[in-house]
Length: 456
Ligand SMILES: Cc1ncc(COP(=O)(O)O)c(C=O)c1O
Image 1 (cartoon, protein in one colour):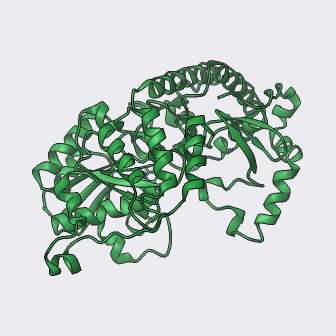
Image 2 (cartoon, rainbow, N blue to C red):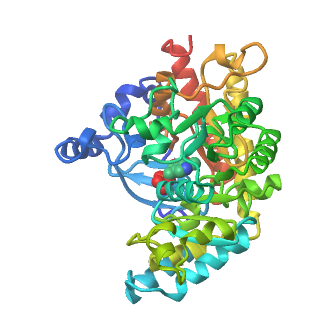
Image 3 (cartoon, rainbow, N blue to C red):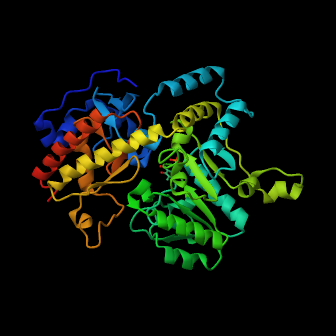
């Protein structure tokens, strides 16, 4: 994908050194839109992660690895559609597929061949997918997976891990951010939270919890909490597989981020582990809304209709959903899965991410922050807390908001780099030049943070 406008030249040193002021000064368009948005949306935003003080960036358009804000600044994008855009913004084959389909119909209120093709590609790539059911989002997918597990096992309790994010429905609001005993949202009934067991990823404790035989499902992000911010090891995943199998517990891999990103078949392909159920979204739908649950036929088939009225009325798991398998998401998803199938996109994104992490760590070492960039596959996480990095026994990764990282984010934004505060993801259309540019910007940003005492 060719960027449609010339890259912006490096900003002057003064801009980087005075990043907080420059952020506000040079973005009058975003500031004005945020004032308007404040009259419409709570806190002016439509997703918690997009909240940024004093205002978030308002984007206008995007192509490949870049996006442009309403004030005309270009950004190298490491938010990549919250992980959905492994092939960058507006990839030609996705644009073509979606444009053609819009004109043919966006919703038939009926079954159609496009959803079958999308499902077939999902089955082809995800090793454990014997059956597939599309949802409208990742949140809906984890909601459905948990419900299927409860129906299949006749058990109620669910085990999840500290820091692991599975969307925003009631059951998965437990144990997302420290302190882990406080749910991430109010408004969730205590009875729902009581049915969720939250543990650190410690196999002995998991085995002890499962031994009571009353847990329906274990749900896990297979590279660790928040796409690996709190990493877990392959041995732990293998141990989970054994322990869940031994106790008749449904193992759910939440591959909403890792699916098609770690490998064409996701983290399960890399580790050679077949979970009972897998949840997918993001890359699955090629950047359009969409998700899926897939997995063992005998569990998935609880959704099927039978000849028995009692089964149909109360024993099957019901699943409506207006946008399930809609034609636009189906064509975008099929186009994305075709691009994901041979593994070259993932290999490129992984290589670039490794270069970015290495470059950032060379810079970090100047400030006694070697290891500040970490992660696996095409994911990059950042930590600026020396105490955590140099803790006895190795780094201690603690999920939670660090104001230093928000400052770093702004010092990168003013140089034309959009990362999440905690890191970012690579696509297959980023270039080595983008990485060099980003590492150089990181060096200037860290210098600015060092000078203003943020790194002290
Ligand atoms: C691992 C994981 N599961 C589930 C979700 C929820 O997906 P969605 O935002 O499509 O509802 C996310 C979203 O980021 C996620 O990262």
